[in-house]
Image (cartoon, rainbow over all chains, first blue to last red; front, side):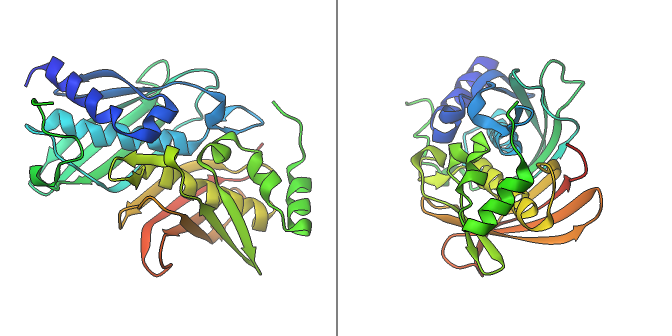
Length: 153
Length: 147
């Protein structure tokens, strides 16, 4: 599958997730090695009104979505992969007023589960706001329906 | 950013049994629509069914929203019972998804396993139909000593 097909697939995946539209998530980059999403800064996702720092919940949503959709970069066909578990470690608070990027990759794909890891960052991926690891369950292509049949849509 | 006295707000909320002002303080909590209910010395948090929290056309609630709800429930719980003078800051957060989060009301309850001077460990359980059948369990650490 070409990188442009992967990009298109991840965009379609993201577009059916209602809450991601509410947060304004966008696909920044996608190829066979992984996926980057952008979470725009906005006042409605502030978690600390004293400082204007974004709520951890918005970052968790960014990383759950990025890790979840990164499975579409690694699989030959689109599959529904619910999250089994997710862990976020915060390196330092996000700087208010700036967008947050989430990068994720699948580092092991088995017939039943997919192991993903990711990084949330602002200016530089080498200065992460948070590290994430998530495990996703493979339900198989049969369990689709949600995204319609790929290629024919 | 804004000027408010957190301990005063907490005291007032306890006195009037109205926790809305405490919840309204945080924009993200307003966005997803968190509520809370005090039952004696227990606090139960509620995330009402809300279209904008859907993360899957099934429909199901976005896993990230469930996590955000649980994280915020833990933070409010610490504020209400532990006399934390500032909003606790998240250090790490880990969640296990046990069942699908259907498009309906979700509830959460917290357990503080340890509160030291600087760090607190909180476990959170979220359910929809019965508390004994959780849709997710989570645990997190908060830094509680600094503004």
